[in-house]
Length: 312
Image (cartoon, rainbow, N blue to C red):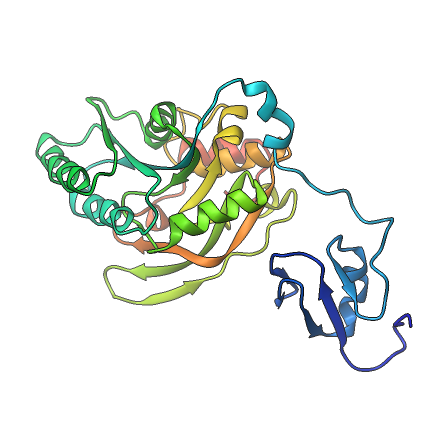
């Protein structure tokens, strides 16, 4: 029986895949079904992996599957890369916060990882804290790399440098004042292995370090072109495939802020695939010196505005 718009009551939507699918605020379980309002009939019929119970899944007219960039360029890379996660952390004069960020990665249950900290011209006294962090990583048997710069070139340059020395096929971008969830690296890795996405992001907690206020941050589902239209709704730790990073030449080294949005938009414009993980991936800390409270006037955001980004 074909369900029509004239029928009353909700519709039962069936998920044909082994992954949960979020649509219109509802989560359709893997190989399961969920009732949603009838107003979403056109959306369901256009979706390549969902169908209405009682209808045959559409064999034609579904939009083409969006493949990850690796599906197109991986055979030409010619370099065998180890499977694992490289956590890239740029740092400047935030010793206590850096220790917290590195401790969150060290506490992960995931073992195929390395942590790379690029210090972008910190005061000499701050660098001593890196020795303590490195010692803790050595005891745990986890590779830890520190890269020092005597000049402050900016966060774009620091991220780019970290990417050049990373060894694994998945990069996790972590700000020095944020934290990873205990199973974030496992979530990123498993999502990447099953979807081969170019960018993976997820839910986060937002914490105001001055007031102690906590808020749950649930980013929107990504659709092609959304980043350029709405700005950086993807916040907190996020994972980027090595393939996508190399294809767009990594972070722009002249961006002192908004370097992550610039990177994500270039991946989006290259046809990259973005996937939202179904678990929390970290905690974003807001404080007096954080980007969330800083003046928006800077070269990075001005450059993005010039390229048509609506809300950098």
